[in-house]
Image (cartoon, rainbow, N blue to C red):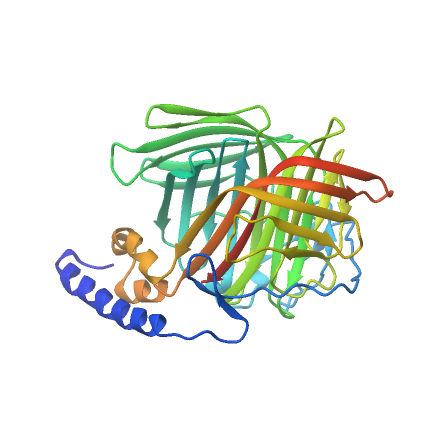
Length: 410
C-alpha cells in the first residue's frame, strides 16, 4: 500500500505517465477499418457476420466445462445453466479470468444498471440511474475494492454480495425471483442512493452459451431477459418507482478473456398477444461456431436463432438500429430515445484516483491505468417481427429494450 507521505510523488508520477500516454494517443492515426465515431473516439468497426448458417449445438444435461488439462470440454448452448465450472482447472493468468453479475433494468421513463464484478486486477460494485425524458444521468457511481474481496459462486443460483464500509449491493436468489438491495454513497457524503428490487423470473428457460476464444479460453454467459422488475429507488429523498411495464435482464458471466475485445449486446421485453416476449442478441467476440447468443423467449420457452446482423450508424447512435436474422426469422428496427455514452480511458481513470490510491500500490495503479471501457448504450423500442420455432410469425410493436456497443481493454 502507498504511504501518506508518498502522496505528492505518487501524483507527480501519475501525471508524467499520463501526459506521455495522452500525447501518444492524441497523435495516433486511423488504421485499417478504423473510424472516428459520434464522440470523436477512434474505434475499430465490428465486422458483420456472414450469412452462412452454423450448427447451434444444444446441450441438454449437466456437463463439466473444462478438462483436467484446462482445455474446453464443451461448446454450445443450453436452456438452463448446465455448464459446471471447476475453477481449479483454469490454467491462464488469474488476471485474465473475469467474473460478473450484471442487471440492466428499464421502463418507459427510467433505466439503469447494477453490477458486481471482479476483472482479475480489481473488483467493484456499481449503480446507474438514467432519466430517459430529460436525457440526464441521475446517478452513477463505481466503488472499487481489491480483487478477491468479493466471493463469486460458480453457479447462477447462489447469492452474491458487494460490501465496502457501510455501502453494499446484495443479490439474493429465491424460488422464481431475485431480490436486489443496495445502498451506495455518491461523490459527496450528502448524496446517496438506495434501492430494493424484486425481479420475477417469468420464464424457466434462458440462454446459457459457451463461446471459445481458444482451446483453453472461453466465455460462459447466462442471459435471462425475461425478468419483470418491481421496486423503487430512493435518491436524494426522491423515489423512482419501477412497477408497470418495467423489465430487467440478467447478464451473468465467467470467462478467461483476452486483453482487448469488443462486443454488441441487445435485449428487450414486452407483451405480445398477452404473453411476455423477450429477446437477447449479440456477437463480436470469440468463435461462435457452435452457439450464438441470439434467441427469443416466448411463453417461457427459448426459440434459438442462428446469426443476427446489426446495422447502426457510429456517427449518430440515435439513428435507428436494424437487426436481421440470416434465417429470415427476425427483422427488427430499434429506435433509441436515450443514449448513454461512457468512456473509461486513461483520463477517465483519474476519477478513480482517490479510490485507487487507497487500495492499490503505485505499480498496480500504473497497470490499472491501461484499463479502458468505451460504451454506447441506446435505450428505446423495437418494431418488426420474429418467427418462432414452429413457424409462427409474431408482430413486435414498441417492445422496450436497449442495444449496446462496447470496446474493452482489461
